Length: 237
Image (cartoon, rainbow, N blue to C red; front, side, top):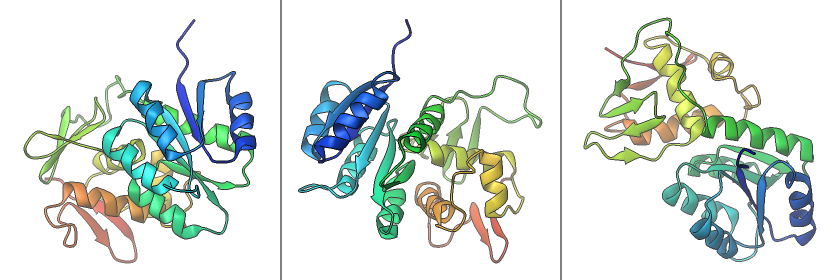
């Protein structure tokens, strides 16, 4: 029997934790935590593949926990639970490196679909078929290198730079379409993430985060350029 993927559900509401354990328990190895502190203990013993985090929790909130996860467990997928009105929370969560978010009150089927989508990206493997245009195993992006097989980003010193699965998908789209201006709709279509909201700045925020990692000066990008009124373009030699 194949090993189940590990799922962590973090929420201070006991009813929601019990529902999550019951609903996801047949699909995953599920652990529930009532606080950020309890969640950290789970990570110390058995880091999950995906963590579902409520933003608004007493004490340390979900945003602070998301930052800690991204810094210490970069391979874990993160889905944030936000209230429908808290757009700021969604933006901050994406800036911190969350892979996706679902508004509360949520539909369990929608949350399940988002978790599966994040898992696919976490465990994505490079295509072994012959690409349309032959590319090197590693692609130079300014001062960095993107490893298309291992789904990793490396700095000029060879050290790995933490990158989320969505950020990798976004970079891969640009790498596969270099020196071409693409608008947000085209990017979402090519990345196979139609659930991204073109109006909520999801792509803009991820581009901003990527620039902080690959550009020598993120405020004056030389690799991932903005084409005013049109979209974005990755410049490759």
